[in-house]
Length: 268
Image (cartoon, rainbow, N blue to C red):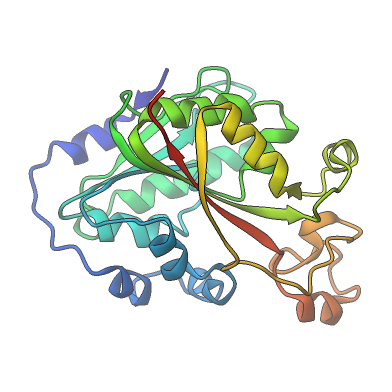
């Protein structure tokens, strides 16, 4: 079950026309948040989106866009001929974490700039009733560094099934997440809340949800990251969970080693 916010509906029906930039222009835009641009060297946005095969006329749902790093690129790129859907957690329940409310408010404020972002949709759903869009209506579902959280909370299969339902046959699910070494102890990773998950575990879950692994990429690989850190992935930049302790050492490692996986919804 999913809900479309009133803001998103008004944007969808506004009837305004937009001239969307090329993907390269969207990444290079001087309207992007400066702190986000600073992370491009670690996130490789243009390369990642090209790897996932994003086209300007696609309908793209991004699960949990947070404050909008990818939104600032995707929404303008899709504004003229495509559709950007921000698939977010519902913030209605009383036990919604304050950070989630804050980030959702930031995202809505960002998307209210219709001259820049166009006819975006914000789709929200409760954690026990995942849904992004009408069944079979989406070309691409993307999620960046979220699968490990869903895995900890035993919601990961619900997410993959919802993504499968939303996608057209032949549609793409693109996943980027912090990568644990092959063969790592899954029980220890989960219990330790390190932020890492093995590539094999993500592939296993996706296949069980009905996806086929189409391709892997090492775009976001970081061989300097041995994944053994006191505060897990948050020890590394940009979080620097240890503060000034060994900061230069962790800065030299850089952001985490990440898997980049492209799955396809195949006909059953």
